[in-house]
Image (cartoon, rainbow, N blue to C red; front, side):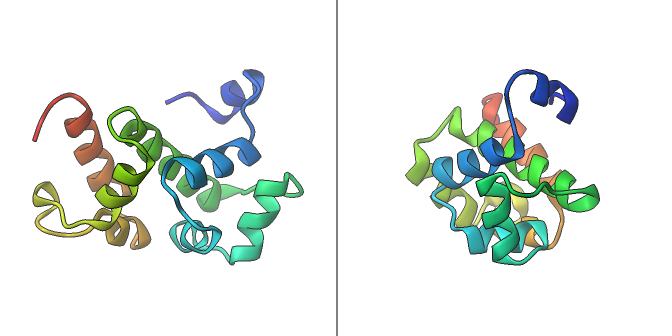
Length: 120
């Protein structure tokens, strides 16, 4: 995954990340706020480009973007949404969205990477 500095150099911004996540996963600002641990208004500010996430919030946003980006290589937006909200055998029957809410990004990332490489 490219660093935040590398993404900025290529024209990618936090505004872009937020809008890409929301479009590719059919995710509301409230859902993204829940996953990143902020209030919905903060996500709206990121989407408008009027503020930037920092520290753990930034890391969570970039990780959510990575998950969505990987899923978008496999599914259309509706499929991404279904995968996030559906129970997953590779995650012991848990829903990926619930794991992300709890901050268990590593398990979800491993499962998405396995899926993306053709694993079950």
